[in-house]
Length: 294
Image 1 (tube, rainbow, N blue to C red):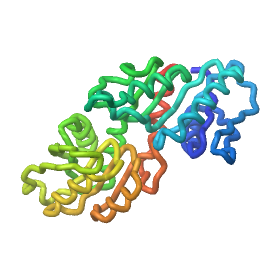
Image 2: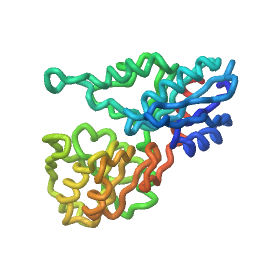
Image 3: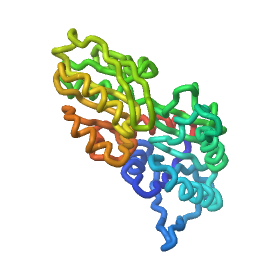
Image 4: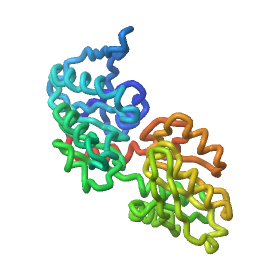
């Protein structure tokens, strides 16, 4: 792998610094700001001829980040970068991978088609793939998706006494089982029916055999928190639960609402910066970057 140069977009500096340490890479600070009318200013005063460059930008709240990301990518290419990749710890616009109702925008494919021409490769953590088998179905560049299951399982083994891992729905079975295996714990998979963006119904099996276990609710994304809140309401006969998510998106009020449901703790990885971050994924991302062959 040739020496890599990392350019973090605002808010991504800590992740870029850790990746630079792991990859012996250089970090360059770009000048970015908003004009009074809301338009983006980007400047990097550096000749990049011959450099392999990676932008570091997690893509929660993506609409406000997308144009600055494109401006940065094109500018780096114009400054002579041999390649421009993207390290996006959280990758957005994957939930709408089919038309559930007539006339809906197929945003997973649309977003990928807009982003792919501006990057040479992409590395991310646990993308929200359901009906898609891999990112290559929508992205036209080499991609690597690394997985936080082992790290989460190891955290549970260290921090939780007598855990039982709980997945929210049938689609989470393999994911929950891998976490449970890494934690040396048993697991349960629930039945979930989503009735709208903020309405979730959960069916829970008989929990008597788990009455002396600490339930650990795991999900890839905590957005509204409704799935975990509804599940917590069904677990009152067990010890207080721990909630663990890979990506802590936390829509407005979600964190406070989840706290009010009285879990024993809320933990996320650092793909999106938040007070709940307790599991670092920089090592996973560094390995993904090596695998993509930069």
